[in-house]
Length: 333
Ligand code: NAD
Ligand code: LMR
Image (cartoon, rainbow, N blue to C red; front, side):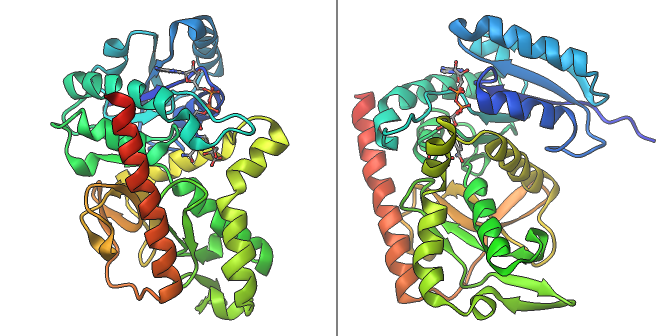
């Protein structure tokens, strides 16, 4: 057996609720696989320093075989040093009754500062996943203030929305969620996102059938389904009085796992990535597309047929991102 060097994984906001759910998943191999040792770098801010220490104590106590070290710090430079993967969760979460735009100014300045630290101190090929909201725009700010990190290495999380869409279809059809695939989340991780099932399939008895045909209720698919997925984050906040955490952590693991290890044959996932103008989406936005991954690289799935209904929804969520980008820039002036 060849010994594998540990990979260094940064989690910012590690003392927060997503962080608390995420770090044990990473230490158990859910993100990078059961044979990949990891060293966790956990960053939080001074008021959370004691709590961060407690998380480190728990990681030691859990005796994870894959966990080869833990750096717990409030120093952004120490946190970013040589990291191979950076999961940016730290920030100010949306509370009940708040719109995502309300948290914009608080978060873009954090992402500007952390961009410079990553650029200077992370491994040259570091892969970055932004989770903190507004996720697409925070990722864009991070990209703009870390110009030497390749565009392809900066992404944001829409896999949670993708997984939510799979979950809704599986519940409606009473099939295993693992038999549903190729839903798409287009656009922003917000209530304007467009969950699209036009290319999604369910595998039954070895054959793949279109989700639209199996459900046979376009009215449900074009209205209730879309609204449920778009509003799921808000529904969880209403129910828990806290934003989603275990599902966000699990989906962050799925995002990095598939990016690094690859997507299964004939299967795509949704990732917020830097737009190259595919599907008429303005270049230079971080927009969620269907992607396949191989050898550590993602590629946007091309040539999917887009009907008028989809076009309109894809354009609306793009327009919101254009507005967020302008607002973010004005917050930084
Ligand atoms: P939380 O408040 O429980 O934790 C956030 C942590 O970030 C806190 O420990 C806080 O001290 C820390 N923090 C604040 N500023 C920081 C900084 N400058 N550097 C490092 N750490 C900092 O919040 P949470 O519930 O864990 O959510 C985290 C973020 O993820 C929020 O922005 C939330 O809206 C977002 N979120 C995104 C998705 C998604 O699918 N993209 C899903 C759920 C939540
Ligand atoms: C979610 O989707 O659960 C989070 O992004 C919470 C939110 O702010 O909507």
